[in-house]
Image (cartoon, rainbow, N blue to C red; front, side, top):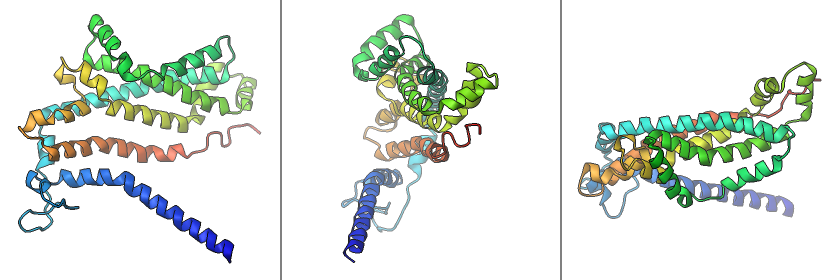
Length: 288
């Protein structure tokens, strides 16, 4: 009886912790959605309301002009396109190059492999602010436009991460897979492309998603490299510049609406790739 009571208590405490963490993480997003449907007068109501309400009648009233202002802003729409181009390009190149690097580091034998791995790991240790001025001087000296410069810069940070993560996934794949492919006459590239790469789909989905989120949300380099090219600004930079675009006061409603819109692609991607992540890596891969 005592053991059962202890089990029930542990389950209750676990669910209390889960609920607390869920509220802790989801409440900021809920508050952003709530604020995006409020006018300036509604945002200034004291005490703050957990749902948009009319200041005079206190009835539920959703203010949709914030979203209309955002969607009718040409700079914001152009920023969505710029962010999509940069994020998709960086993700595709990172997965393409990182998968080759992960295969080589995880499955092939050659001199200097450990030095290569530690060099890749060391590249992830530098903070962004430490290399910002040097990268800006190089990009300015080479006269590269803003969008390509962002792609090149993000690759400097995403490629080491992608290669390091994929290396661990390739290393854990059984060697029997490669041996079976060699017996069947497959070349190393055919083994990589036709057999091993499909087995790392969960790893590709995870690293690709993280790379896309990083490129989509990055602000520091985007602000720096687009300072002289406003048409190339990405979503974080445009959202940060909303106060100068719409009014003399800080338009919190428009900023919240833009933030919600910018978060929708990331939420969709997480739900789409969630099933891939939980898939088995090597189920049925080894020949019997």
